Amino acid sequence: MLKRFVRQSEELRKGDFDIKYGDEKENKGDKTGPEPHTGTDEKTLISILTERSNAQRQLIVKEYQAAYDKELKNDLKGDLSGHFEHLMVALVTPPAVFDAKQLKKSMKGTGTNEDALIEILTTRTSRQMKEISQAYYTVYKKSLGDDISSETSGDFRKALLTLADGRRDESLKVDEHLAKKDAQILYNAGENRWGTDEDKFTEILCLRSFPQLKLTFDEYRNISQKDIEDSIKGELSGHFEDLLLAIVHCARNMPAFLAERLHQALKGAGTDEFTLNRIMVSRSEIDLLDIRAEFKKQYGYSLNSAIKSDTSGDYEITLLKICGGDD
Image (cartoon, rainbow, N blue to C red; front, side):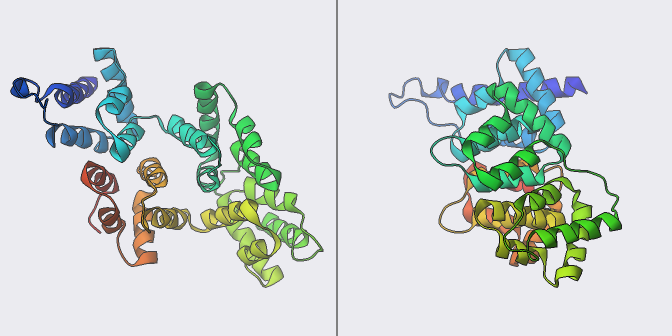
């Protein structure tokens, strides 16, 4: 098994060499310098990195480092550019480190990308969140919670910190009595009082399992004659409202939530490659097939066709390889 990965890392190194030096000999007499290398090397990189699982890619990264005393991601950064470079680097980054970097990028600079924070923190499991928090501290020498606290505020911050703690129940079992109790608490915290008890919404929506929340939302409708989404829209506002609505959407149908995020990333004048890369890479081994199905169901055309319409070149080829299928 490892010999095969060594061979694959050598193929990558050969590709790297050709990208840097492939045309130099042929162009020694050409004062304009070497022509840019096209096709072959990129195809090798794309083929190897998109046809392996993340665990296999991490073995390739390790063997590449051992064989050449260089980090594969640094060679990719040196020889590629733009969206294609970002996507290829994402493919060789361990999942927890990738998410940690995405979170940092979401909070870096003058403005905070709340949509990215919401998407990551609502779609990761408790175990993933613990791994992300650990990776965040390892990379940045600062806790994820500290950065969330400094970049957000109010009930939105409280809810994000609760999610970042990775304390959501992951059990698949549901408790009907608890669902009725929580539904009543939510009703009393919002529709059935003057003002809103935001902490009750945070506690229930950020800590209960998704199957449990689905049952709770059914019970809530029985009590209030309204969907929980309508109550959240009526009682809350701003990023806190957006976060709780995202949780509800994920509890009901996470692939549909992520399909909507992809649609937003691909529609309009410019492509949001930050969101597109993150979802394609992070969900490729989890629920991308379901996301593709939901995308077509919601919008009447395939995710593949949307990618073809909004991207080009090696970036497009790589995304389509990750996406798979022709539907």
